Structures are given as C-alpha cells and as structure tokens.
Amino acid sequence: METKPYKIWAHVVWCTQKNSPLLTAEIRKIMIKHILTFTTNKEYYIACMNGGEEHLHCLLSYSPHAALTVILDEIKTESARWLNTSKKLDKRFGWQQNFAAFSVSQSKVKDVKKFIAKQEDHHQKISFALEWQTLLDKHGV
Image 1 (tube, rainbow, N blue to C red):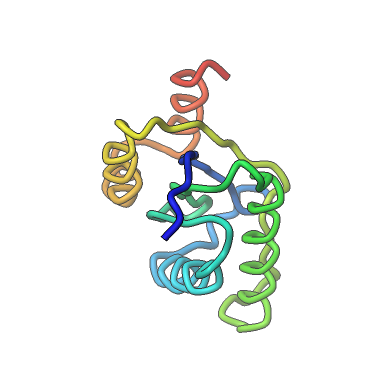
Image 2 (image 1 turned 90 degrees about the horizontal axis):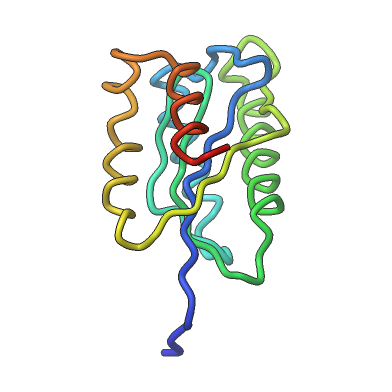
C-alpha cells in the first residue's frame, strides 16, 4: 500500500437556503446517511458529519490535488437533488452557495470530531448564529 506524504483536514460548515430550518432530526439523519454513502470511494474522506436544523458540519480529509469548493459543490448538489427527488419535504430544498472551511491540525482532529458529534446538545444551549460568529472569530475570519 502506498503511503501518502500528506493529510489535509478541514472542518466545513454549510447552511440551507435562507437558513430555513428544514433539517429536522429525521431528515438530517437520512441526509447524512445519504451523503456518507454517496461519498464512499471518493478522493476525500468524511470522518464525521452532524448539524442542526439549518446547517451541517463535516470533518473531511482530502488530497492536495482536490479543490475544496469542487468537493462541497458535489456534496451539496447531490444531496439537494436526492432530497428533492425523494419527496421527503413539502418544499423544494437547497443549500446556500457559500460555506465556511477551517483547517484542522492532526492534533485537533479528535476535538473537532467531538464538537461535531455533539451538535444537537450544543444547539440546546446556543443558536446557530452565535456558533457561526464564534467559529469565524476563533479562526480570525
């Protein structure tokens, strides 16, 4: 097996169009399952994914030959298409075009996984708007 001399991690967050709270716990669960299935055997690896009613977080590792914007466009386009085709919602679903991405060092991967895994509990205490601003401030954006 070939050893690759790189490992790039990113914590990525993206939102539903107009921050609409369409990702109920049930919808979010099946959406994440679909995304994880769809992304199997790609040039990137999703280590964990979770979120709230209007957003998703994911921790992914990708090759330096891949563009993060292309990866996210692929994930968002496929997942929105799938959800709309499945007719699990009464309205048309879409993602906002933009996303936030933060580099993660190998030594912090475990912490970010824990943060993402606890999203439901986290949002019982703080709003997504506050979380978003905190993430931007923490990363100097």
